[in-house]
Length: 418
Image (cartoon, rainbow, N blue to C red):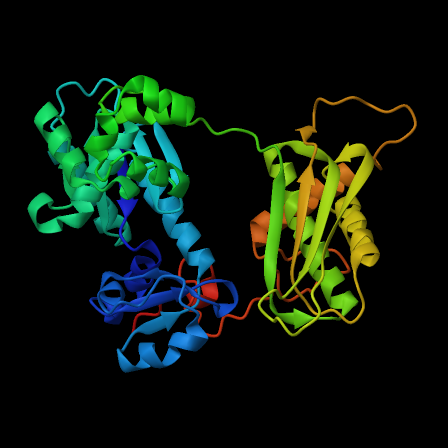
């Protein structure tokens, strides 16, 4: 059996854990630089605040309807997610972290388990230990566990947050209830073809001939069909080494100052290098991107990129940052105000196993220096040790005018009990 555990309105729930006055109140969480709505509480959804709403257009609506609007507090959300996932691993060793707020669990050897009770125990422990409400869907396959989770979320009073598909009758009933566009793995293109075939519910898709599904949707669609039939095709994904690592961000405002942009790109490159070292990889290529604000139609637009090939693989922040900053000088266009930049490291190879060069090689002092920097940053957090061309005060420069305290990751923001 598989389970999908999903945190309810995760960002809003994290805010409520440390600010109980927000309980049962409408909440909206904004994207980077306080741009648009990316998460809503059920109360905000009931008021019909749309997902993706630009806050500058909906500010009045939020004030009129008493919606609390907050900046994304990624440090808090990431830490709370880590706590939830750690709790899930107490119930089974087989856990696939699917996103920041949901995970698949596989139950091997749980033949005589009452999964309704077990799911309830999972929910209660997460709620008690973290304050985060969840829903649990259990079924014989991953795709069906998604369906079960949606039923638990849709009917909280009837299911008490846990729904188990453990019989053929329950499977058929669930598939008849679920709309085809809500099925996990069915995108817009997939949906259009199915609608043209007369499919409006998940059961309609399952009842299609196997040959037709395989011909029109390939092995991916065929596996999904079998999953919904209760025949397991998808196993838990094992953590894999990334083939590329990217750090891209929008700026808080648009900038035409090349020195500012170089500093940001240096920071992005340094973060990529840290991720490389954490993964045990080195890179052969660095891809740098600059982009103006596409929403400002009257401003001059410019989007450019540059690939830097390195003579040898490296995970050194010094080398990667220098190469990235050099690329900025080559693609920067004077007079253009840039809104976004990014660094992607590619051509990854294991740091402890790659082809050595006869004449070109990394400065041997870099490796012990990087290890020391990583240890100090891990010990003191918040990236205390930086390169000379980085801003010493901030890692990300984002507009976060409505940011809540980082209750669990910053000692200065810890709750004070009076």
